[in-house]
Structures are given as structure tokens and as C-alpha cells.
Image (cartoon, rainbow, N blue to C red; front, side, top):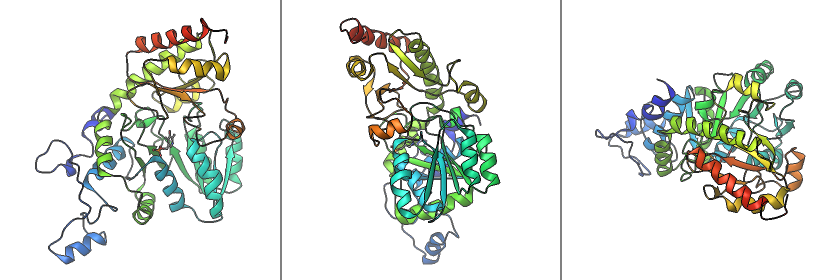
Length: 395
Ligand SMILES: *Cc1c(COP(=O)(O)O)cnc(C)c1O
């Protein structure tokens, strides 16, 4: 099956009940048994079945199966949010004294987990410059249990070479985890490039409609089982209603991503040519310093770009409310275009100090291209620029 077919058909069959063509939302918390031995066998994992909602649920399983297929993974386990997926994975796999090597430019929540929470449990975290592959390799050689990458990063769209870094990581015996939220399996398949685990905030592109929170981890059976057993106890399970929304959203994943790839590229090109724009980050641009690497490991450049305006934060704050076809909101990856300064979106969890420390311009704007008509989106940006720059002296 190709990805567009998998998006629609994969993973649903065993959850279809009584000839239903759509996966039902099973809200039942527990499952009844006539035979105690059978019940015990299911509890001990000796037989297939359901016992209790914190462990397994048919709607949730259909969601896990679909993403598992799209990521070409052996197994998948889902969570209530993307951050729950990342946090549970770290706590399930690490022990005091272990060491994570990662990059400075990860999602704000991940950055907080690395800097504030994990060190309290004796887990060492070293964050390298995102583009410095040699430094990452050097740090791994000093001892590393997990190499954690996010590529492209949110929001500056920096690219890490997964195949190159996975090679060194495996030489030192570390597990490679890639946050594939920004790319989605349509644009990038980290497991095929050498990663051991791939994590998603399903809240973003997988669901695609900004109406359900969720997270998921895919990889080999052994690692996923370890994380599943941890989640079974700690309890950050995905809600069946959210699983249904995510599953429904995923049916159009391939077609949405194809359109968002196209829209983002056209908008990046438009912004790059605009006299009001200072910088544009988008790996699909020919002159972007990540372009060649992105081309090597991705099949599309994604729907997110970031840019800064001439006139800095004053201009930005005037510009954003002028847009008609963009929600000023914290999420990304929805069918609608969403936009926001990074200080209230990707890096809402960080102080200005930390944003600068991560080497990111505090005036940066994140743009998540929706699936609207691109000429309408460009006309919208154009009228907002005119409203800001031709009626005030902000320039
Ligand atoms: C949003 C996001 C997360 C966190 O996901 P939630 O579902 O909001 O918990 C993690 N990583 C990336 C790259 C994200 O964009």
C-alpha cells in the first residue's frame, strides 16, 4: 500500500464492529468476561482481548495501527498528548545516571523536560547546537543512552541528518528517537533512515483539524512494549473520542500534506521576495542552508515556515491581527492557516533569555500553511503588509 491508501485503509479492520464501515468510538471503561480463565489469559497477555480502558481500547488501537503502518514500524503506543508521549518514553527508558544528547532547538515543552524535570531525577542532558553534527557526535562518544532529535525543528526548520547521527549513536549503544511531528510520515520516515523510535504530537498534522489532543510512539516491539507497560501504570492513555477524531483526520493526511507542502513553498518564495521581510526559514527554498540535507532525507519540505519582519516586534504586533485567513493561535498543522510569534507558540514555555540562548530571534513569526487556495493566502499577506507599512512609519 502507498501512503495515501494506508491513510485511509490501514489499521481499521479489526476494530470494525458488526459490518460497520467506520471505526466506532468505544467508550466502555471495562470489558466483561463469562470465563475467568479467559479473563486471566487476556490480563497475562496470553490471549488477545480487552480488559480495562487504561490498558487497551479498540478505537485507540485502530489509531495506533494506522500510524504504525504509515511509519513502517513493528509496534505503536499512543498517549493523551504529544508531551505525554515524549515524557513517558524518557521515564520508561532511562534511569538515574543515564545521559541524553539532544539539540538546543527542540519544541519548547521538550526543552523544559530536558532542562527542568529530567535532571531532578539524575538524568544528564546535553544540548548541542542544532546544526553542529560533529559536536553532537563528539558528545555521544562521551557516553549516551538516548540521542533525541527533532527534524525539522519547530519553528526554525533546522534539519538534522538522521542517517549520519544514527550511525554514531548505534556505535555507542544509544537509542535514537526522532520527533517527526513537523514532517509527518508523508514527508519523512525516520525509522527507514535508522532511528529506533519515532514520536508524534498527533494533535498537529495527524489529526489535522485542531480538535483533538494526542501523542504516539512507534518502533520495534521490544521498546514499545517497555514504554506501553510504563504508560499502563502511569496512565496517560489516549481518550477514545480523541482517537476517533485523530483517526478520521488521518484519512486525509496524505492529501493535506501534499497541499500544505505546495502552499508553504509558494508562501516562502513570496515572503523571500517581499521588501517587508527580513529573514525566511524554509528548507524548501533553494538557497536555504538546509535545502540539500532536507532533499536527501525528506520527500516533501513540510507546511511550516518562519520569518521575521523589518521593524521587529512593533511591526509584527501590528501585522498579525490584520490577517483574515489565519488564526492567531498556538497550534500548527491544521487545515486552517495559523500564525503566531514564537514567544506565544513554539516557545511559549521559554523565557526571552532562553529563546536567545537557543540562538532564535525573538521577533520570529511561525506560519503554518493551511490547505486554503494559495493565491488567497498570498493576497491576505499582501493586504496586511500594505496596512502596516504604508499607513505607518514602522519601516
Ligand atoms: C506540539 C508539539 C509537541 C507537543 O505535543 P502536545 O500534543 O501539544 O503535547 C511536541 N513536539 C512538537 C514538535 C510539537 O510541535
